[in-house]
Image 1 (cartoon, rainbow, N blue to C red):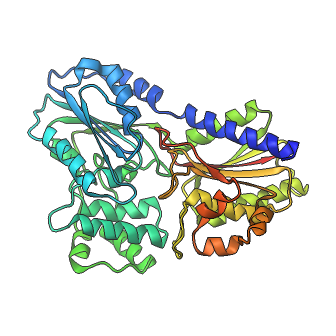
Image 2 (cartoon, rainbow, N blue to C red):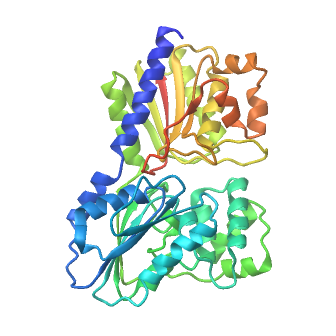
Image 3 (cartoon, rainbow, N blue to C red):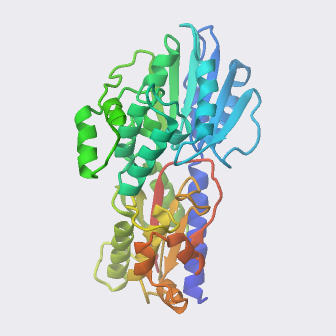
Length: 422
């Protein structure tokens, strides 16, 4: 590995590690709770859902101690790092809900039933909650929700479209959990994984009024030519709660903060950082090609908006329309598509990574590529176009040291992609 390539790889790893470390939720949770007084004289229950549920609950327990009467943590398999005194922990399926999603949600509902107006619920929400926190509404089965979720994932629907549909099939989403807790007050501390920080779509808004309509459902079905069974269509057309009088929410982390932290780390390494956007929501492969095109212009001297050495940063959540039967995730597909266009550019590296440490149904957080990646793949008789057509980015990148492996990080504030040019 030449000196420039080695330097770029090392810098990329530092940016990944330090950026994710900077957006860990503990400090933000402590700050949010320092502004909130639980002094109503009733019981305080702690409920944490999502991929960052464990670390958020740990911080809340540290802040409130014996004020917490009891609680439940529902998180993704492998995301709990130990026990939390006084709280039970259930790990469940993501991105497709499973039986443990139901088993983990029921104790939450049992604990928060028959509350008084003096009782309070501290609700810690992070991305992934839509799959992890689930109880099908009457007339709907877990199998129905699994099938609907799979169809939405594979057709390329974005997170807002997915959650617009999914919340209507759930007894705990779209404000329904807040109603369940009434007359107790529910205070939500939210780690946003939704572009625009729309509270009614983060984890499908279990404690926030719904802003969508039946017309939105019709539009999504037509847009992706979706075919749902009649009993599902009937539930999708039902009204959702539009107002709540017992719920308060505060957002403590977002993809905008993620991009700012990445820029700060890159600046500390000597790069001139530029944040292109924090709302990237296109097809993953198109996002990769877009950043690769910018890298080419920078290196070819055709774009004077960037001063080398530079770090070009984009955040958001891209989508993948699944047409093959391979293995991968949106960040891996993003990086692999970028590799095609930066072939031969020895002083460029591009990576895309999920802040939660998991990308699709894989053990990778994302992918990283450079000017040699395409030729390294060709030497192994692997063509990028074929891999993308089969949605098999994981297996291709694993052949050329192109996977980013972090393990579960304990946070979840969308993805970020970076181009480093020297």
